[in-house]
Figure (spheres, rainbow, N blue to C red):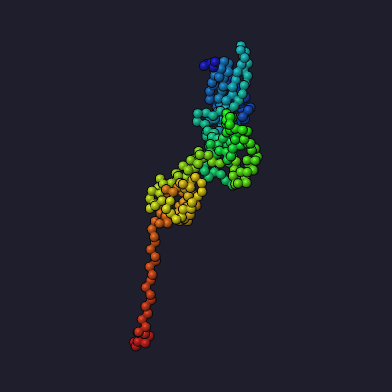
Length: 266
């Protein structure tokens, strides 16, 4: 159990702690003595100010100890520790949590976890197919022939389903929520639009289950040009928002050829 009172001999050995600290860090890096703290029975730590400009608020800590009934003080270690007003680096966050949309650059690789909730297997392997068989079925004459994973992969590649993993239901919902927030019916642009994208001629349909809720904008004057937009989105560039009136035709030029001003007498 840590003693509340620093050991007298260890606490008085300030010069020993200072000499060891200067030997470890250099005399130019060690400042004044800041105090002593009891770490345990006959174990104390002396603190010295750090004079390094890059470590403002940090302290050199040298721990001293002595054996029971011994008067010789020995050194345990010397380390640099942050003080109460030290400049510290922010709390470490894993890269997967620090990553934000737009951070990925040319040449960067973004691996996905094997158990990523956004993905699921593109097809079932032999073990999954075998597990689907009902062993209690007494009417079965012979067990079904289960193709190997290599055979399944070859067939999947031949018919265009070569992806080993596809979006899961969770992945689809996450993407849809993200797109809906940016180009959805609740956005300020859609709230002020005269009509929705579902009736716009510039909407390019997409395939798959997301086609029931999204499409691609193909209007170069729209803020969502080339983006995936919700069918409930809209903007002022809607194809049927307003038909532009034809430009006015100027009246034909009229020339007065009855009077020739050059033939008039002065």
